[in-house]
Amino acid sequence: MKEYVYFIRGEGTNMVKIGKTNHEGNRRKKEIQNMSPVWLYNLGKLAVRDAYKIEREMHELLAPYRTWGEWFEFPEEDIGTLKRCIRSKKKSRRHRNGIVVFDYESFKNYWRREFGY
Image (cartoon, rainbow, N blue to C red; front, side, top):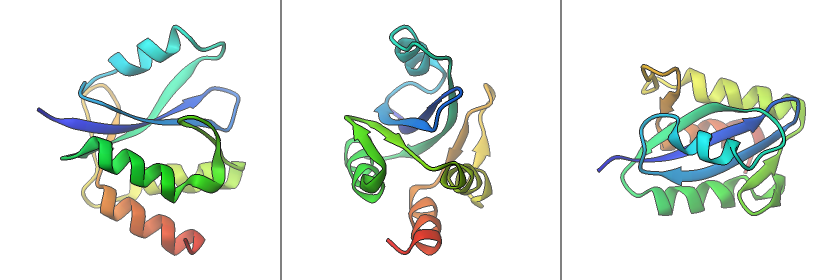
């Protein structure tokens, strides 16, 4: 079974939810959308072998931005970096529903080069 770590952003905000799912499409976003006061959209997904472990590592890597639970608030310039990181990886590909799937190690290395942690 494929596993993913996803990034979902709240429209008009710099809030990003980082979580895990076993679903390939937009199912998880739709579930979260039902509980959100703002429109949500997918920034990207990581296709991984151990979503629990990678999600935990992503939460640790991005801990300075954590606001509550799995929600992180990034300054606007860091949202831009996050988007570039998701879209610039060699191993990334665009899924048929528009979600960008990318490689965690490439993401982590890019983020650390940009921010030094």
